[in-house]
Length: 489
Image (tube, rainbow, N blue to C red; front, side):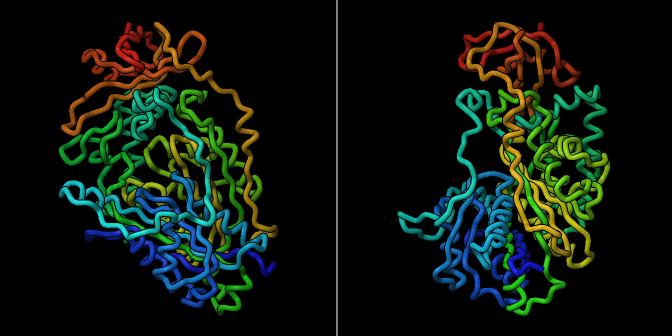
């Protein structure tokens, strides 16, 4: 074995239901557990602490974690926001190890939105640790390219549940399903994830609701954006942390870590779709997911169905449907090893650390290989990571087929809505009292350009909710502001 082969030797996760919790403290708890999982023998050899950016005010949380662990002289890293950043960061760290830039590193992340929301409800300020005004990581990871503009903000298509609900409607139309047939199918899909969470000691929702309970709106399961009630949305109301320790095979051997505790990153890949959703060719497809994901599968000479442990990013049901189509997974095949972002809990950008930790322990216990996917934004940024109990026959690498994605067609970015068009997709958004507020529509003009619009007529809203109105003609009235009002014709 190449002595520079990267190995995962420590992995731990921490779910807290007590309040208050603070993110650096939670990361430190997970980090100590991950170091202990590696028999505690690598603490003094850690050279870097790299963190997935969270919803908190820290500019260099890796330094605070390092200080809490008593580590001096280590470098720090911090990602941008994005659900795929965890796998990108782990892959970048494994690549640094393989290329001789690093011998041992800690990667961690935490979110404490449960505490933050409880504090806000109580009218108190959440507690965070002091940090120097000039705090900054030694290395920043990820792109800062914006993937929405003022029109997206005005239309509220920059709210994840709204965009994904529109993609869900587009997929329902593509499948030629009635609203009832579609709701029943995606409820069954999500019930399968709930059953996985029921057996996961780290999951926040372990009650295993049935498909009927998931798909039926109630006081405890209010509608959010049609067709999604609360139990079909990512559950961000969690305090969760996770951490992994990576090192060279040589360092693991020197530390005396038994080889049956080693898990090998085999290869990784990533790419992003066209940044702005108005320019995508289809709302319910992801060419970057297909190209990057299948490039990794081709590189490994495997199909996704041949992996023993699969976790596809599961923020909303449409994300799984698109991933299964783009990656070639058999419908009905297991798609999560945690319960997904609804039932395991979806701590914003750090979720992917949790299936990573789960995969490490499963591979140790039962063998087999793992295929993991992450998604940031709105089918925007994608990352894939494959793991196994034995090293690959080639050096670890990260595939970046971005040029192939960029060469694909896009729709022109327009800021002037047409006077008329056809409905491409839509969703109805609801108030917290469970009543429909308005509908958001994607409208295509005669030249195929996409614009956002609002539907406020009550009869039209009920029509959109009760039938498949995709391809219906609409008139647009731009006098209401940047987002025109649409009426069915």
